Image (cartoon, rainbow, N blue to C red; front, side, top):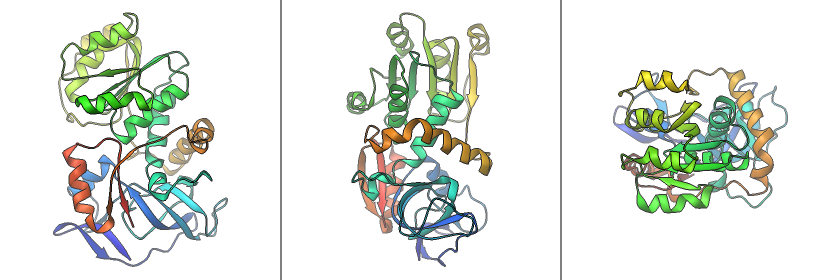
Length: 319
């Protein structure tokens, strides 16, 4: 089968053996795969072993299932978070796999959902403990995950949803995806805009995909007893942090990642997401725009587009 890997010459398409599903795995004939920022790390060489498969999520048809798999059968149209999903076939854990809604969703659209759904439900609802009528700010809101985060917050009853982008054109589009107030973090006074939108209180919950570049301003913008959930580090892994302001406001600063989660934890994250969000997915209430689609053979070009950070929403590979 054709698959994108990181070898001695960087990212390239190679012929690899078709995987065999283990007892608890589902073998998917991939039709589309969506790019995520974590994939850039794999492409840059952060891998285990001499060859690394790339990809985080995909959609396609089930070709085979392991003996312990229940609820999924060959022929089902599915979407899944799936390490190594930039390929013609991928075998992935059954707890990550979801049947595609019967609402005319395309494979390209379906490939955009799995990571965004479970990441942002976990960040906003589970780790972030958002309650109805609280205010929420999504830092880095024009990415696919960010756009989903705003929609999740709005669906679950947030009073005011804010989203940040440093690009004026992208900020103008955030309102299409649940944003009430768009924030430009290149304006040093942006925390004052957040406070104004929350009656001077500050925002109850910040889901931060930027980190270092906005860390102290997040503390300024946050309410007393607010929460900041650290999801991504687009602005850098290291930066200044005002520990006194953090303590003064008694802010909960919460780190999340899937890299250190057990199989059982991932299953539970997906289960909780489905309880709250799957009806909305099936009803078409949660949507993500596709900025550009590339064939699998153009994976290097697709990754370059993501690295340039000029897209709005998702970049998708067709297989």
